[in-house]
Image (cartoon, rainbow, N blue to C red; front, side):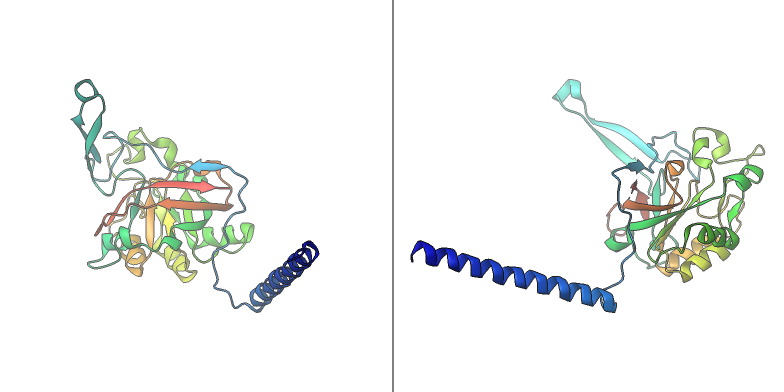
Length: 271
């Protein structure tokens, strides 16, 4: 083939490809405009800021039952072998961790089977620090959700709604778990609030305390209603003060052990 013929052939090929891409882009735009694409939660347009929402924990980290949540045993010592590793005994619901549906149901979804697209969520943070300072067993109520929506817009389907009660700052102090009389005392969600969030198709709720229910709960109403619905929770969150009320995306690093009712998780937010 002559040089001129080759050049002409390349031009035609480029023009043909350009027309193909232009047509594809137009088709995609038309489909999006017609609403035929699958709805996905609106994730944050990241500025590159990453916030760790996970407490580092060891056997001294507060737990619901008061027993150490993680135990270390040397399995290989550096002095003996030139490398080292621990044998760990970990209890699922300790540290910053997930409550999977299986935690409060006989045959619900295990932590290993949580859908991946429910582990990357728009993050909405409801601040109740003022009333938690007055009442240790304060709860996120429907009116707090309504106030959030008024100030920040609708809570998107698939979101993670986290309570910021200021309790994360108490880790290491007995008041994180108990009041002066030794009774459980910490904020949580009310069932009325979580029923409202379930109707919004929220994927998960999170708390900066030991439990989704407040410390003085006698019936675990939130656990028994929220988790059996196929949703999950995150307990003992950290770092919520470093994020806006809305606009961040949370990445939930769920453990994946088969049949797990939950487990320690690395939770990160990007904004």
